[in-house]
Length: 271
Length: 146
Image (cartoon, rainbow over all chains, first blue to last red):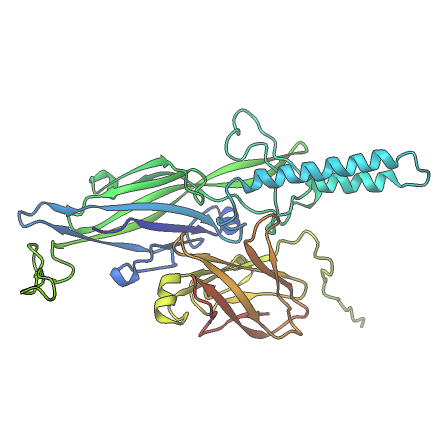
C-alpha cells in the first residue's frame, strides 16, 4: 500500500512578486528521489508515481498526493497555528498595560508623554485593513516581521509574507482524468486548515503535466491604510506514472500465500 | 583641469532593510539513514535578485554586504520530522550568528549581522535531526560572497 505523498511548493514570495512570475522563484519537493522523481528542489520537479496492477490488469493501488505551499524566508510553518492572531493579541495586551502605566504616571510632572505614547504606538503595530472584498484568512491581523515581532506603519520593510495559497490545480493530468484534485478542510497544524489533495489513477502509465494556480499576497499602502493585495500566478509541474504487477514486497514474487517454513506453526517442545 | 571625486553612497543605516533569509530544507529521513547531510540538504535564500547563486544545492552562495542582517532557519521535507539548526560555524570577524526563538514559541532561528564586506567566506552548519542526540554537520559548505 503506497503512502500518501506530500509535494512541498516553496515560493520565494518576494522575488515572485517583484518579477510577477513563479518561474525561477518556486522550488518543488516530493521526497521521492529514490523512487524515481527528478528535479527535487527546483521548479522542474517530475513526481514519480509507482503504481501496480492486479493479474487481470485492473488498478491495484492508487496514489494520494497532498500539496503544501510554503513561503521562503517567512516565519516557518512550524509555529503554532494562528500565530499571527496570537501575536496581535499579545501586542494589544502589552500596549494596554503600557497605556495604563502612562495614565498612572501622567500626574507626575516632567514625564515625557509623547515619547512614551510613540513607544506604545510601536508596541501596537500595524493592523491590516479589512474590506468586504478582502475579508478572510488575513483580515484584521497585524503585520509581523520575519522574526515574529509586530511592525509599525513606518517600518514595514521587513514584514513576513503570508504563505502562498493554492487556489486551483488543473491541466493535462486533470483533463485526462489521471488525477482528481480537490481542496479539503483539515485539522492539520501546518496547513492552516485547508489543503489540496488528489487521488491518482495509476492504471495509465505516462507523463502528465499539471498547473497550480497560486495566490500570493502583496502588502499595499493605500490612503494611509495597509492591505494585503492578492496576486494570482501559475506554476507548472508533472507526474510520471509507471505501473507494474502487484507483488509481494517481502518475497518479490507474485501475490499469494506468504511462504511459511515447514514446522513454523508448531510450538517448540511439542512432539 | 579639475578632478571630481565621487564618494560611493554608503548606506550605514540599515533599519527597515529586509534581512536576507537563508533556509535549509532538510530531508531528515535521508540524512538520518545516511548519517550525513550530503544529498539531503537544499539551501535557498531570499537574495536572488542581488545575485545569490547555488539555489537548491548544498553550496549556496549568498550575496551579502556589510550591515546586512542574515537569518537562518530550517525546514523539514516531511512535516512530521524534527529539524533544527544546532550551530553555524563562521569566521567571527565577519558574522556571529545567534540563536533566537520566535516570540512565544520554541521554534528557533539564527540571526547575525555581516560586520564587513567579504569576497568569499564559507560556513558550516550543524543540524539536530529527529531523536538523534549527535548533531550532523554539513559535508559541503555554503558561503557568503561579496
